[in-house]
Image (cartoon, rainbow, N blue to C red; front, side):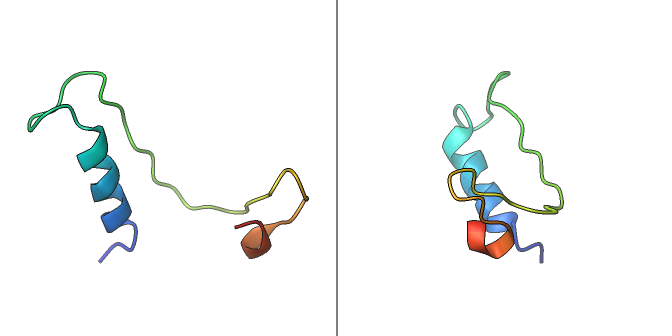
Length: 49
């Protein structure tokens, strides 16, 4: 199972206009995350999360 599936399903449920959705409801892009940086402190990786 894809570990991001519950998060994606929650975003879809919250963002979809009605049962069938409408043009303009948006898109979700899922990709590998190489690194994360907290701008305020400069923390990187897990420390930034």
